[in-house]
Image (cartoon, rainbow, N blue to C red; front, side, top):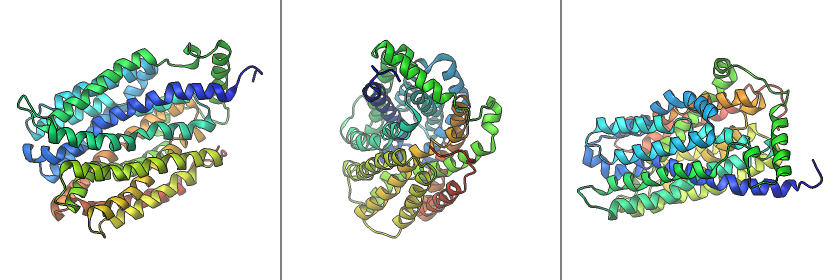
Length: 427
């Protein structure tokens, strides 16, 4: 490294320029996909949705996501992150606004499916984009800071969504419809902001000095050229046994995580029947505050120790045990405390998990593989909410569906420990 390059200062500048914007954009996009959970507090009655119909509406998003994930990621590689990420955000915002005008369960299903189509490719595009700017030793922490947008989107989106539902009306539209409109606009604006502020690689970063651009570009390129990794073609990358194994783990994880996320407001409302929508929303934010702190701390620990497999596995054990215990307690506060532990486990799992494909695949292969893992795994986002809905319909309480998700999560814990990642040292 040239003597005049201050490595720490350069990476600090890159972090401040890249991560907060990616965080903000992902938070906006996640509010778009998750706000149906809060809409359900009014929407289900207005549209006549049963528990299983709501579960289907929440989950069908991931069918559209699955079908378009890999093609979307390949198009991102063709057109560049800046263009493609902006396209995704604008598409999501427009579909969200259109959702405000659905009049039946069938129209809601179509809107949710199209939202999944619009968002497909967004998460792996950001992950691959971050690997163009950050070295391997920083990636778990950076991914954690970025994916912290997920729990933070609930912390911010929950009170905002429920407040809009209770207080914003007019033009013949009820509160949940205004929620979809007002929360769709930031996604459109975020897409336009992406075109202006993002660049695709360090060599294009005019906010770095020429020597700094050259150093960072060369450093990242050297890491990506690591001969210990394996390069595969597109189809082989998708069908590689270890990629499919990680996809199955992520499927189970998503079933548990999103099964909780979409049903959390109704679980808390059921535990405290006298709560208003805003009060339900405020209580529902607390698990995500705890989960955000736990997620960042655990991911930093993974980077500090250099260990990945155990840091991926143990959070799932915590999530499974806590999730199974929710049905054994009474009252919204105890339920919220256990859900906080479960969500902490789910979110702490995420950043170390996404370092695993890079342990045995080259960067270009990992790009396709991450899209495949995310695409296949996200089908769990359909299975989890829908399973909870079916169980809730038969039992009369959404909380009983959590026992099923707890078992799945404990299975995924064992799968991570047994994952065939090869002999390469876990860096």
